Length: 163
Image (tube, rainbow, N blue to C red; front, side, top):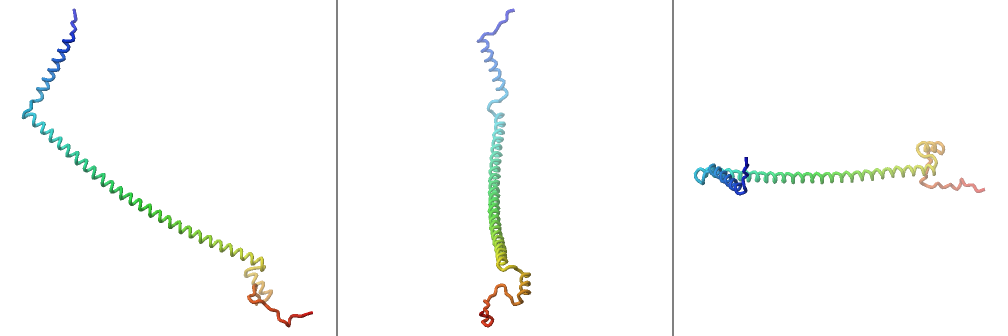
């Protein structure tokens, strides 16, 4: 049983016949350029045109939406910038008020400290100070006694004795 293997030429011929058969099969399915093929082509053209219109409308609506979003974003940024400016101004006013309050407190504290210092120096110089001391002086020296006389007291000549 000899098996005959096809040669190179036979294989080329077989491939060519198969190719021709496939082309014939396709040609029978697709009618020639006539009345029957014009209707589907017109439908395809209409569908392509409708597709282009839908694409253009979609792009236009996307562009409009993007512009609206950009406008809203710009307004939002402007509001945020205004809020930041107002917040900075409020903080600046608060800081100035706080600095003024601190300065007033320091002035008051210094005045209190100076008063305490002056009172201490007066106590060191004049002894007792305050109501209790005034009451003590009035009892001891009389009601007309002044701690710091405003007029210097001159001794009368008749009370002076020369001995």
